[in-house]
Every structure is written in C-alpha cells, then in structure tokens.
Length: 193
Image (cartoon, rainbow, N blue to C red):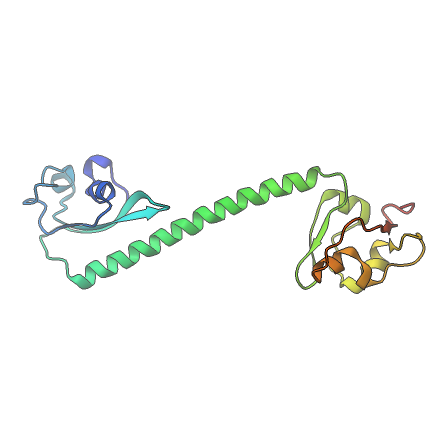
C-alpha cells in the first residue's frame, strides 16, 4: 500500500540505494521519530530500493508490528521480489513506449498518399495504410499467390498479371533489394489503374 512520505521508511532505501533493515524502529535512530512508528505501529521494517535505468524510483518493503530479526532467506526473497517488480515496471514502460511509437508510425503511414503495404515473414499482409485500402481494397487474408489476381497487379505492359515471385513485396520478403520497380495496379477500387 502507499503511504505519505512523512510516514515512509522507504525514503531511506531510495536515498541510499541500499536495503534498509530495521529490527525495532523504536530503538533505531534512523527511523524512531518517523510518524509510521506512532501512527501505524510499524516496528520492524525491511525494504529494498527499486531502480529503473539507474534511477531509484521507490522501494519494496515488508513491515511487522512487533520487533523481529529478518532472516537471510526472507531478505533474499524480498530482494528477488524487488527485482521482479523492477522488471514489471520496465516492461510496462517499454510497452508504453512501443504504444507511443506505434501511434506515431500509424499517423505517419496514414498521412502518406501512396498505397503502402507490408507483409510478415510468412507473406501474410500485416500492415497497410488508408491509401492502400482506398486504392486496392487491402484487408483480406489472401496468400501471396492470389495477390496479383485480387489486387490487379500487372506487369508494366498493363495487361500481363504479375507472377507472385515477381511482386516487389514478395521479392523484398525473400531478401532482395527492390528499387524503382514498375508495376501497374488495376483494382475494383480503381479500374482505370
């Protein structure tokens, strides 16, 4: 649970970036005047600092209402739980950063007037922008062998259906560097191409 800073033993662990172990707060000069002793009955305390990217952000602690000696096993478990909490916080921060980057990328993709399409490593269409939807009707789950027919992908002569192995996206997926490839697209959304 959270508590006000005035009642916090944790601030010592955060400030020193070291565990704070208190067997009897009433006798410990570091914390005996802390309001948690009187107001909350905190007598014994064990806390480990939580550090994310080199910054001490808080502490994870165990408290007891009576004096006690903390065993090495208990302190080890508390330290392990502290590392788990740090990892969870780091994962949450990473997920938030990924969500922000994804939203930014989506904004950029949607602002591009040209159709943009990408597929995953299995050749399944995984990403397309609004222009691709408007121009090609992208969105169906189709194997790459059906792309040319469904999306009206034609060779530069504007007549010959483009073979699946010649489609620039397919070639890029296989590791080929594809630049300045000419392809004509005629779809139900844009029958004139």
